[in-house]
Image (tube, rainbow, N blue to C red; front, side, top):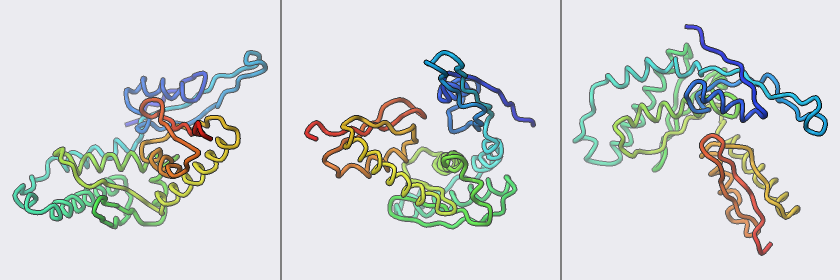
Length: 242
């Protein structure tokens, strides 16, 4: 089936994306966004100004995973008594189930990539390996995050609290964390130098947490989150004493 693609305009890229979310009735992470024109304010904000424009469509990833989710929902129920005996057994079954669902999704996408599991007391990390696996990352990790969300929902469909599932490929999560920490430190120095708040671009909850933690020990700075949903931002402020 051909994907519906719409072209939308707004005063800013964020405004155009918000219109796309309303058009399709889905959150930002489920959309494929192509920036056509970033827009410009023009002379004095009036003369020669251009609106920002984008092309938007539903991520093909969602279509590719529908069958996998159906198969997972039809699977025989697990034995609750075996899970209830020890938390370790429950964690192991969740890890195996997450790996099975992910491998099924990848196969239906035509991607023959092996999946390795690394488990800790709090997390289950599924590492996708293979040449070209970076295509699953997407811009700013959006495709990888969307796939991680789907695998988490399919694995924890009974609603029980389990270990957090993390999807990774080509060490993207580690590289992303280093980049965010460096960005946080750079913007923190700017806030201290100018003695003015500095706003970070919108981030998902995981990335915002990295920025908060990167600056939490700096007594000259404080961080706050503002906004809603996909447009939630971090603001880095110098402390009043500073």
